[in-house]
Length: 413
Picture (cartoon, rainbow, N blue to C red):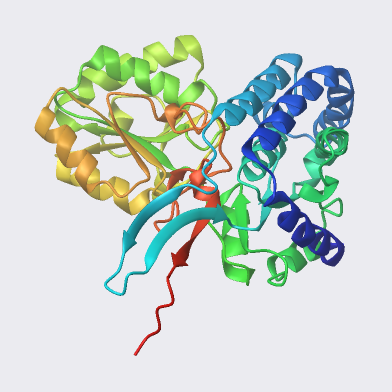
């Protein structure tokens, strides 16, 4: 299967490189319309995945990651339209100069080629990944989890039908329908076809791909995200932000998993937070030796501070100063998103300078680490590594570059 999909994708990438921006935008606008027109079909196929998940005792939060509704499909269609309106990076001149030999050198953006994605649960990733890859003239091979296979098949069916209707190769997108681990492993070894592999999912999936892949990867991280409430924080603001970051949608990677609190305001803030959060959605707190005297919860283990719960669970650590807070977060975090709540400008600046993460906030919820919220239209993932791309990956992250050199007969002596 990987061999067949790979050959088709390599050919498709060559064809996609010939498309104009107008042709790509027209396809994306048509796909947005097709998504809405095929809402009933998509929801019907999605219902099969939901039923299978519920039969297998999957918890409600994880089922929500799978669910497609008419409203969510409208949001997906709007995401496609936003990608269509964004500037096409392909062909952009990044820099240009004339060297001492009179050669005119242009550094220009080009497609990466064939992008592979291995992801879990959320079927909206299928649409986001295709939209961004197509806008940047990349072919994409998608391998979702078995829990969303019917949803992903339906979405790729709509994509392929739209491609054919627009006179574009249907192999611009490929779907791995065999969700076995063996076929996923074959994909990780497909250096002949894939230029890059992007894993998107939990820590276990990402770790496996990092260890086994021979294809270069862009690591999209699990989100062990922290919020630090400083001694100079507005406690009402802090309460509002922590509640939003923890319970608004706990199953996503930018939801807060850990709360770090300065000891000077812990006694005033932690009971206040617990009362407020209990009124919205009770949270199972894992508490250090100080916090356990101020809140209701369970004693925290060292593992609790490094766990991405993806649930209504949160660790709490009380620290003596900003330096200790930064050290704690850098030690246990996954370099995704971190936030400080403070009215102290110097503390805010130090936190943003010293925290090692792709997105570092001051007085805001970490839930904004998202391609849509950042104005990228969508995202193919949130990179927690430092080479090539970091943070929400939009269009530019899916391009490489090459040098175009024009001469007038120069030779090198």
